[in-house]
Image (cartoon, rainbow, N blue to C red; front, side, top):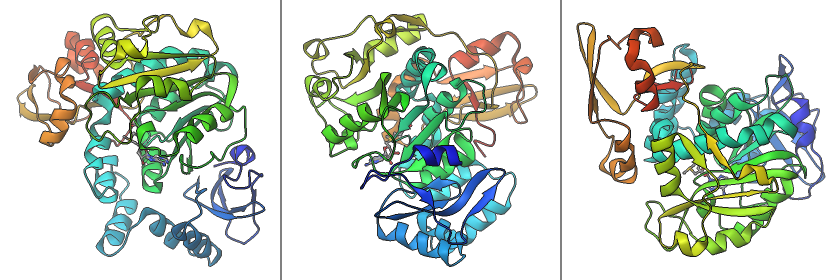
Length: 417
Ligand SMILES: C[S@@+](CC[C@H](N)C(=O)[O-])C[C@H]1O[C@@H](n2cnc3c(N)ncnc32)[C@H](O)[C@@H]1O
């Protein structure tokens, strides 16, 4: 993090500014604060691997003590929750220049969430969220303020948001937050290195100044927040009055969902967000339009009754009426990161020919994301050897279609093994 981001932070408890404490623990690299201790009138918080952790619990307090004792590695291991054999494995990973997101994720994620965070770039719910932010970003970040990706996990959508930020050297154009430090560590190291990360609890007041963000995004997470009214009000507080609140993939209490969380009805979600025009959209219709027409049609807002018992919906709140139009989502053939074969495919190599077979990691993943079959074919033969580094020219006339269907993915460098 840098001093400009520090300037935007506020203590989630007393609401006052935070400043660096002269404990001898501050480490700066190329103008970025890599580690140190920040404090307000009531608390001290650690900055570890450039990530401020604005949570007051024992693990965080231990990290502050480790930093003050000149032990930044202990602070990092504690926040990552690493013990025993995993400590040595982590050190090996750090020492391996070609270490990947996939291998780091395997080490840091101890449950099935790791599956979600490996295949996230081609989930149907991600496709819709990505298309909406691509559609709306011109009305946000490039105009009047940074973007916040709240509960952003390992930073997949943050990667897209950061790529949409204006190409100027200003601080904290894109900020990702999550409750779990290890996810943000992966986000800043691999998935969204262009973003700033802040570890904080969305079930508490948000640690940011008011009227700050041009867009606040919360994807696939609001039902996991217990203090929903507080979180909704906080999203509005930290957003500019001409900003946009975007909540893709809200699980509907009237429908069926995997990992549903504590869900509300469409009307209840709408009533929590009273900023500008608050409109609801059917996730099923958004996906249909995107796959059939490459559009995000924000003229098709629905009443709670029209959404009925559909499993999930998307909420957009904005005072800008021009937000609510039909947005064309252009095909993207360029490569900003590294071109890879979607990790959902098992690859059988032949001479200048590869056979790709869609292979789901678990039956649960297959059931939850079965809509990906609408664009990911069960099997595809590619006239190229995909075992080495990939470049668009290798795929000839097949390339655009392979990209459009997410068989090939523009992933951050070193994403998969
Ligand atoms: C299903 S994941 C979605 C992640 C990301 N938004 C995406 O779409 O890829 C839900 C995320 O919400 C985070 N989360 C849950 N409760 C939270 C809380 N109280 N504060 C901050 N993050 C929270 C989880 O750690 C997890 O990363």
